[in-house]
Structure formats: C-alpha cells, structure tokens
Amino acid sequence: MLQQVNGRSPGFGARGGESLSEDLREFLVGEAPLHQLDDLTKVNPVTLETVLRCLQARYMADTFYTNAGCTLVALNPFKPVPELYTPELMREYHTAPQPQKLKPHIFTVGEQTYRNVKSLSEPINQSIIVSGESGAGKTWTSRCLMKFYAAVAASPTSWESHKVAERIEQRILNSNPVMEAFGNACTLRNNNSSRFGKFIQLQLNRAQQMTGAAVHTYLLEKTRVACQASSERNFHIFYQICKGASKDERLHWHLPEGAAFSWLPNPDRTLEEDCFEVTREAMLHLGIDTPTQNNIFKVRRKPTSPPSGRGDRRLLA
Ligand SMILES: Nc1ncnc2c1ncn2[C@@H]1O[C@H](COP(=O)(O)OP(=O)(O)O)[C@@H](O)[C@H]1O
Ligand SMILES: [Mg+2]
Image (tube, rainbow, N blue to C red; front, side, top):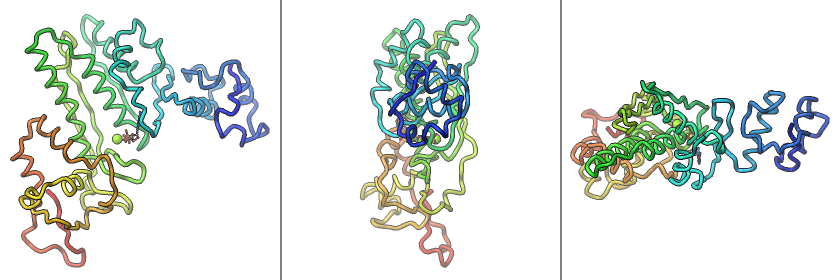
C-alpha cells in the first residue's frame, strides 16, 4: 500500500481532500512514498488520476523513468540530466546480472533486447517502439538507445576490426545530426521537432557486434519548405547554412551577407540545433565529401524572377 506524498507535489494540497475520489484517497494513504513506486502495475486502483499522481511524484523527485509492466514510461525532464546517460551507467546496466532489478531506465530496455538477441541459439529480431506526442522525448530516447548499442555492441578483439567497428558505430551515430538537420524544425511544441517518421534498423552479426544500420524514413513534411505556421521555422539546415557559412562559402553558394529569405522565418532565434559544423562533420563521416556538400548547400536561383508580391523568395536547394 502507498502513503500520502505530503508536499511532494504542488498539485496535491490545492485540490483539497473533498474533491478526491474514495479510491484515490485510499491510494494516497498507503505505506510507501508515491515516488518510490517504480512500476505502474503496482498502482492500485489503476485510474488515470492515480497513475498521473504517481508519475507526477516521481517527476518531482527527479525520477524520469517508470516501468509499466514490460513497457517503460519516460518523462521528459526538460533539463539536462547528464548523470543519467554516462558511459559508466551504460556499463552498469550492461553488466548487471539482472538489469530489470536496477532502477527503471532506457538502458534496461536496451540491455534486455540485446540479451534477447544474444541468448537465443537462433537469434530473433527485437523491436523497440518509441511512441509519444510531439516533444515527449522520442528522438532523444532513440538517440540514447543508439548510443547504448554503439557502446555495448562493440568489443571486437583485433585492432583492425576494432577500427572498423569504431567507424561503423560512429557512422551510425552520425546519421542522427544529419537526419535532424534536414528533417527537423522548430515548432511551437518542440524546438527540435522531427518532421518525418523513421524506422531504424541496427544490424548485429552472430557475435552480437554492430555491423551496420539502415534507416527508413517516411512522411517527411515537405510542405514546410515553402510554408511554415507563424512562430515556427523551416528545417534546421537552412538556418545552419545561413549562420555557419564562411565568407568564401557565401560567395560560392550565392548567399550574400545579410540576405533575408522570406521562407526562413524567425532566423534570429538561437537554437543549439543551428550548429552547421556538427552537420558537416557528420556528413563527412557518412562519406558525403566536401564537393558533394557544396552542391547540396548551394543556393539555386530559379531562372525566372520570383513570383511578384512575395519578395525575394529564394530557396536553398
Ligand atoms: N531524457 C531527456 N533528458 C534531457 N532532455 C530531454 C530528454 N528527453 C527530451 N528532452 C528534451 O526535450 C526536447 C524534445 O524531445 P524530442 O526527443 O525531440 O521529442 P519528440 O521526438 O518526442 O518530439 C529535446 O530536444 C530535449 O531538449
Ligand atoms: Mg522527434
């Protein structure tokens, strides 16, 4: 049974005892503090309110992962929590005899699926579905999983194969900044909103080492290139180019200093996603060399003049 979490969540007192249902009242006067409940299947009775109260109490205690049976509920902390994603913690979950006995974490999911592939004589594919509303943390979670697999699925013995593996892992991780630069944009709900769906396949060999990855993307919101809701932005890559190009590159890419593009609203907003260097570096690692990058970043002018009434509407190709 659970105990009241006095003062732990600001919402509690404000509602007043009278408005709480009988079930909720019982739930709140149990024995254990609500934020210590690490599996939502232990919530009794299971109602929207009891589940939300439990998650709220955990959030207030800076506990962002909670099990719900075999599902993991991840709350977006909306602040950096670097200690939650250290290589040491990855190792701890990877080497734990029973990772499910550790605190709920995305690394438990990663490790369990990894062991499921590993332990079977005929390996069976494992899938992780990361779902949630915009801004919930899906992209972040997918990145965490990829980093986790890049760390645990790479331990070849020879120096040569180690180099190969390092390259493969790095390339897999480098696919993220590239996909996000070209497919993510700042929206009202999320500064780094993915405007496409993706299915990432990580491939392991029989020794459970990472040998490659395939990313299938679908439903890219192409209309955003020409039309953005007010207060939203175009895809990050356009702003990255405008902000990050050198003098020479501006000349080469037909991007005059101070040029304003009416299809690039809100260019003054400073986002950490505006880092062109990261995208370029990642493209290089993926085998997209500088001449090819130059072709991608070059502004192409339409041979005819832009439609009247809409100003200088040039588009970066
Ligand atoms: N676990 C986390 N730790 C720190 N920040 C996070 C975490 N999850 C999400 N965020 C923050 O929330 C933002 C939105 O998350 P994101 O993964 O892009 O959402 P989604 O893909 O579900 O739309 C991220 O850019 C990041 O700033
Ligand atoms: Mg996303």
